Image 1 (cartoon, one colour):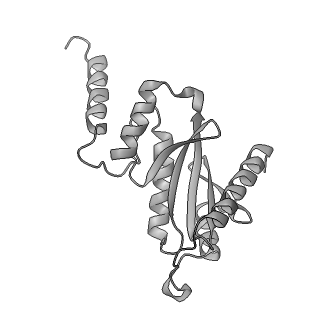
Image 2 (cartoon, one colour):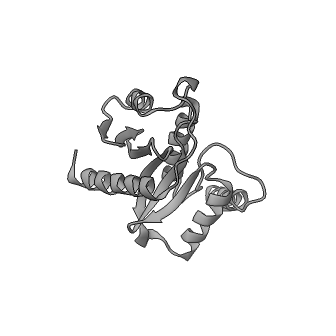
Image 3 (spheres, rainbow, N blue to C red):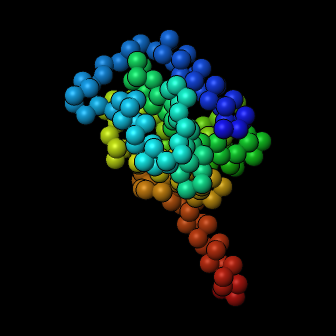
Length: 184
């Protein structure tokens, strides 16, 4: 594990512990009810990436060559899946506007966020009710918003109606068509 990830693990683990100390406890599903547990989460993440590494309440793994981190807290009943996307310095006013628009209609359960001068893809959820299909969806959505940063800003699944992303994507498509058909 390189030093960059170790520092990230320490920061995220501290972040998780701080949340545990300040957040009121939430009601958890009984363990026999198919609740997501630390052990089950670990098994599932190892099935996504057999080289996934665990350090306390933090897992680091790769999905499609993208490094991702899962931080969980069983006491606070929370999970966070994150991936770094770009330095904050990559954000101009237009890009920031697109991030906010995407958070409304095309990022869905994943979100763009800023912390520690980095643009992140983030998924937040209660831990215990999360099932393996929701975990798969969360990983895919975080991966997708990271991969589409700078282009379509989408989680790759659906778009919530009434937002601006569909029009923005239509503009992109029309620009592509013009480039392919310069005489039109």
